[in-house]
Length: 213
Image (cartoon, rainbow, N blue to C red; front, side, top):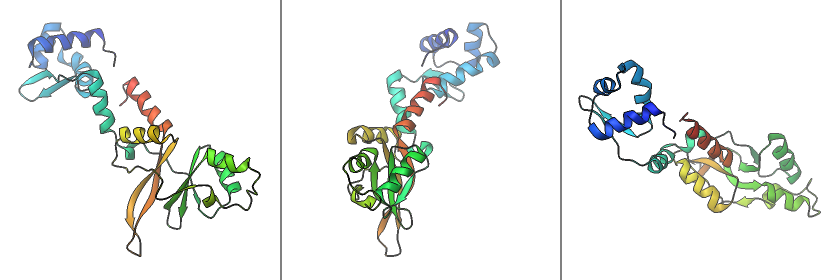
């Protein structure tokens, strides 16, 4: 993050004199505590400074790169997930193509009754069969999809760093966000509750860069 000139002065004062109270920082800058309050909030919320009651402000010792890494581990998938676009596993490839274009997504999640994950269909999967001369009006989507248990997914409690690492390592555009539930047969199943995509991750980086997170 880019600090203002005044924030850099505050940081120098704390480095050389910390722990130091907000009142003493204001005195050194010949400003009121109210004037400094927004700057102090930014410096503490970003993790550059830490504050303790009756002690004052002191440097956290964290480097900017470490602070960014900590933030990426703190933001959870459940906080930024999008609404999933799903199709029934029995639908045709033609229906899947139409759904993908009307919903403007690159990945569909195939589910069975109850919204339980059965597979994932990518744009490449559909393109391969569409160009292959197959009768896509009759071909079921479960023939072209990646099936469980080979589907990579994330859970709401996972960090966005974990999600980003899976997106890159598996070379996919989106992952289903799931939660484990027990079915009537007492067998655990994965209910699709969201989608995490490269767009979601990019949006977080943009907001981090703008200081909105």
